[in-house]
Structure formats: structure tokens, C-alpha cells
Length: 160
Image 1 (spheres, rainbow, N blue to C red):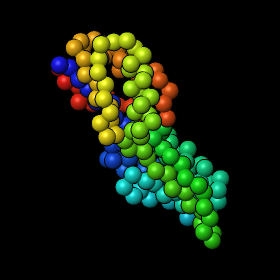
Image 2: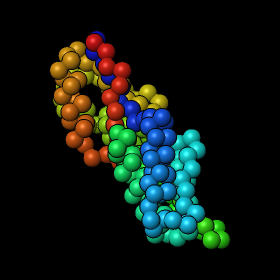
Image 3: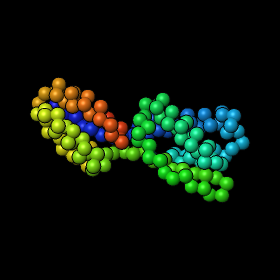
């Protein structure tokens, strides 16, 4: 019986590439010369450090653009508060990994509204969809891509 999983994951290797590219952009920009601006990656979070608030906001845009270039969805970014410690200003950006319970329920509800003969079940931080016809599953994928959710969705583990 065909099935697939709906997940929200961040490829950590691509995240490392995006952070490194953003750090290179900061190092090469004229307006950041002599400024203690840096990106630090820690597991699923990135710490932005600069001398002023507006520089941190510019660094957010740089990180967002490099995430897009590395084929990571910037919807996964969860911006923390900008905090000042002496001359340095920091912001922690965490990247969401996995679907939370309300989002899983929203996805489940959207699948049931399609009126296709499929079953969907929540499994920890993902949703598994099972049906008899492969075409129905592909139509469900297309409809879920059109939903405006706060999490980026990936469809994995498609089996016939």
C-alpha cells in the first residue's frame, strides 16, 4: 500500500554551508570592515554577533539569502530577541526541526477535507499518509504545498 511521510527537517550540512557563505559575505562587505560581526553555528541554532542592532538585521537578511541559495526554506528560522552585552549585540536564530502538535493536526484536517480515501496518522513529529492509489497521494502532496503553514514541509519515504 503506497505511503509517504510529511516532515519538517533542516539538512545540517546545508546549514553549515549557508552559515559559512554568510560569514564570507560579511568578511567581504565594506560596511562590515573593522566590525566584530560573526556567525556561530551550534547544532540547530545560529548566533549572530555585531556592534549594532541594524548590523544584526542586515546579517539576518544575508543568512536568509544564503539559506535560499542552499535550498533551505527560511520559514524554518525562528528569530530570537536581540540582546546587548556591552559593545556587542547578539541574536540567536534557531531552526525548527520537526512538526509541532497543532501543525500536525492542521495537516491532518487538511488531508481529511480533500475527501480522498487515505488514512493519515500523527507519529511523533511527522505525519504518515497511507492510501491505495498513488495518484491520490500525489494530489494530497500538491494541495499541502499550497497551504500557508509556518513550517516548511518535505515529503519523504514515499513507498509503493
